[in-house]
Image (tube, rainbow, N blue to C red; front, side, top):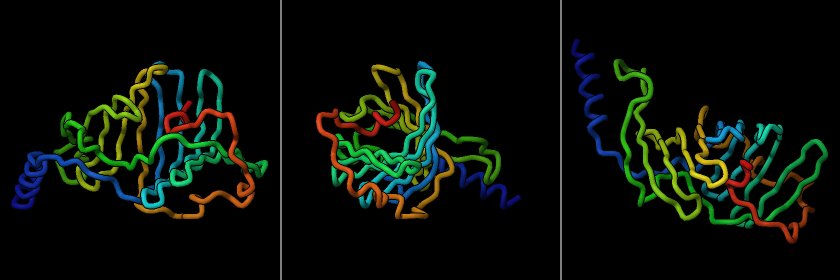
Length: 209
């Protein structure tokens, strides 16, 4: 009975805690599901995130406008370059990368929408305490982002786009750290790739289209 009372008191204390704007771990790996409001886009991707070196690796497959696609992309923000990697044919396309690196964090000007428990708050281990924030970013426009109260692990982010309406990105199977750091470096067969000229620079959201 005492243990149950203590659990309830702790749960109430957590829910009463004022959420703070936080930053996700600098090294993170996991998977995401992406879908658009107009149902033109659906995809699944594995990601590796390195805020220290400002690098992101995305390996994704999905459907856009009823056409399936596969994409393996390495974003190197410090170099201002993005590699599209074709392991099967052992070649790469190198494009200019637009925009600054955006760390996974709750921006300082974000406004708290609310706090909630995913699952159940009836017993220990049955729920996950999360905070949802909203704002307007110069890079991505309107957004709504949900992160865990403890650890600031991303749960989901929605971006508003002119072409597709709201774009929903849902995170799962997140782990702290990077199992294979070599995945964040261009493969050997990419080292001779030259930057394409006359191409429109790409940014993070462009990858999903």
